Length: 157
Image (cartoon, rainbow, N blue to C red; front, side, top):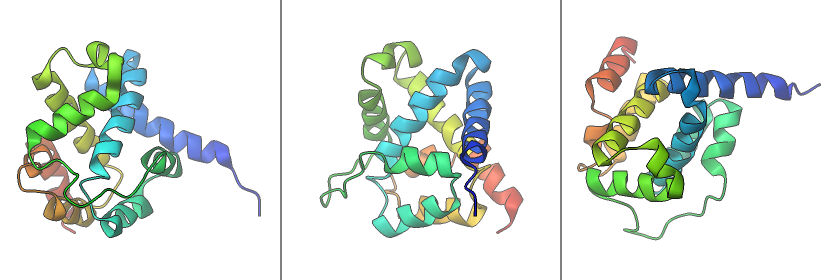
């Protein structure tokens, strides 16, 4: 059975193109890729390993690779509990590129909300609700944005 790796790349690029468009246009693809990596790295430390595996099961293969790259199971209570901490960690993960990707913390927050809105197009509404349910209450607001909530509610799962 042949493996068609180019199909995996197509789905991954589709996600990045959608995210780039939502962030501001096709010239934002590199920012979209960095944002994806950064949010996944912070998010996976907020979720239980079981919840991460459920999320991974629904992601396109290329995004699975980004999610697990360098992943180590977090120590207890090593994850952010507040939205501000989550955003700060995303910006820290972005390193020096954060200055290109985000003009300030509010811009980073908006980008993260856009990310979750686009992610909602690739995973089921039920999975998004489960993910929201296991996140610390201080971080849920990032996923309870109108765009994300509308996507989840429209699926009626």
